[in-house]
Amino acid sequence: MLKPRVAVLVSGGGTNLQALIDARDAGTLFSGKLALVVSSKAGAFALARAKAAGIETEVVERGSFSDQKAFEEALLRTLRRHQIDVVVLAGFMLILSAAFVSHYPDRMINVHPSLIPAYCGKGYYGLKVHEAVLAAGESVTGATVHMVNEVPDGGAILMQKRVPVLPGDTPQTLQRRVMEQAEWSLLPQAAEMICFALLQKQTEGNTDGSKSPV
Ligand code: GAR
Image (cartoon, rainbow, N blue to C red; front, side, top):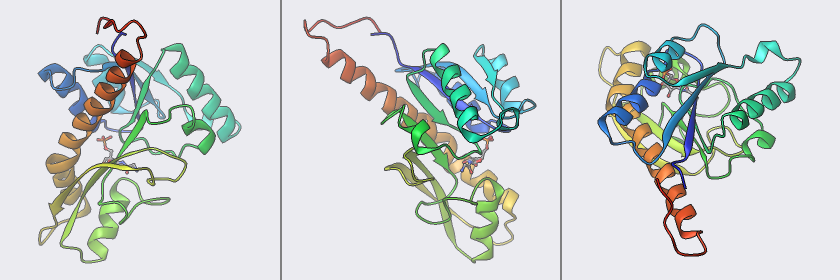
């Protein structure tokens, strides 16, 4: 088979998208093709990163649709039009329904900026996570990459890394450290793992035992 086609879903600055692009360019993300970036916000800087890296882009904004169902149908149509096999949520700030998630079983992952099960689920996203960690006086935080299922931030954990909270941290300094020390390395590794597994599965599925080109 061909390499799995990966869509990266974003909403903002896209530093995690950049980490995926850098891993592609360094040859450490090689079992999948970064085929599409979908942003839930028209002005997201992540779109400029994608264009600079030669990746196709689409914008699907929640506000353009009457309800969540119509939004998700449009998102699904977009992914299907680009023949997407694997979905990576990289700073995607919307919660997707069980119905949507069911279209990508074992093929959708998310990066979250805490040590799940701490500071996750509805209401915990972006800087809010780091604000909560600091407010609670934690000395250690981190990041998690997990499979996406019907429970927000509730799917099986693939990778986690601990990161220290330092005296004088602000939500911004802590966010940056969690990204630098955890997210930007975990997410590309997990994306490679998922694409490699899918490639293996499909190669094994060839009834004549032949290997298809990758
Ligand atoms: C990242 O810290 C990511 O883990 C988090 O938002 C930030 C996006 O940054 N995602 C969530 O909180 C989702 N629940 P980026 O746009 O620079 O990658």
